[in-house]
Image (cartoon, rainbow, N blue to C red):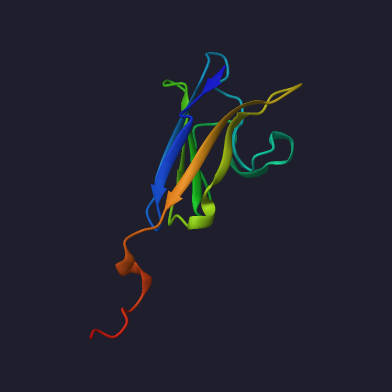
Length: 120
């Protein structure tokens, strides 16, 4: 009922967009993005209001597109410790639907690491 990429990679300080698709009938349901390997204890980072309005929280935003039957999650100003297991989910009575996605953040170019040391 819900699917997405199995794994995505991003680069430190940049942004990353993940797109999850869902079956017809779930358009007006609340969608969410959850962090943590364990489905039962993952931390919901951001969720929709059950509309197509974009919701932004800290460095993460989520936007649903009913015509497309997909929602996109954008993570900005990525940090190395954003690397984790995440879940795309749909809130529903009974059990939520979820899809597991591995997110890996690679270090950015060295020059963003502040002033260089002395040049010999």
